Length: 141
Image (tube, rainbow, N blue to C red; front, top):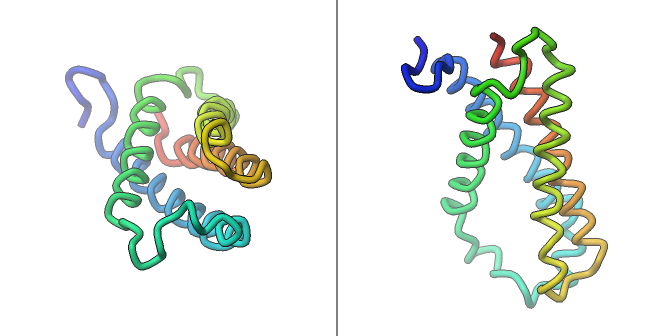
């Protein structure tokens, strides 16, 4: 079943987006819930208390990131020549670099340690790369 407007394979797109969301959820938990936790504790005055975190909002953004990036991938950014995972890695690096810059840019206006901004940049790159690989494996032309 393909979208009459974009031509994307809807079941494959939804499967890729779901797999992408699961990856983002787990990766964010690893990075933000564990690896960067000491830096968050050092800057606790900047963050909501853990019990005040808005989990539906956080999960909503993760879902949207998965849906949007899977849509970009499915619209033909990759696999037209059957390059598979190689194309997924290329896509992931491009998306990851964009996410890295957007995430690390907060350093310009927030009083956070440079190490936290660099951690966010690394997380953005890792997220993009992971999504690109997942999409290349799940959304096959």
